[in-house]
Image (cartoon, rainbow, N blue to C red; front, side):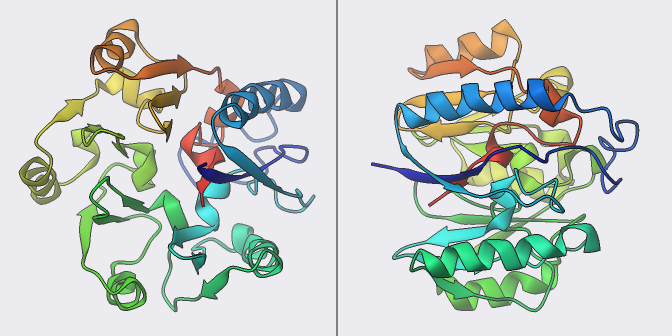
Length: 262
């Protein structure tokens, strides 16, 4: 059974401004509603995967976004994140402690790297590294040395999609759900050369973080998206389920941000 890592949003709020989504949402989170929304996603994931939980820490309001904790690769290895912003540095210590206590081998990098927020793998085990805002392109050779495999670099150019997982979602059957305009032209061409089937989302769906979806088996759990896109996913044979994650969007995160694949 697939394993994931989540963190309860007990202390979640927008306490600082490190992306365009946060700028106008300082202290606007309805924490009770956020907990309800998180519990709904948690229940769905628990029905089809094993959900590990790390205890939240009061001084780490973004810790709920566990995808940023690191990158998992077999067998039981983690490349620990090296956050760009000082506001999130304490998370590194908390997550490292959890990984070590749960018998993972932890690898560290010297350049900025934000875990599964910026490093994603497709069904062929090909890795893609998002750079431009958070993760430093200089980390590429470090990651390749740890993984012992080549990593494609994709450059993000719109600060609203500051992490790769906000605009790029490899699907279980080999397709790609993505928002092309979040990338420079070279990266767009590279993606189209690699993926035989791409689902280009509209700007309106991209702004709802349609690409920030969690895929488990044949299930796709996404924020609330258009019926057109939902129907497209269902036509490809997926069980698509929308979850209202409006409180987390205030911080620039949604379903995929809340889940780290293990």
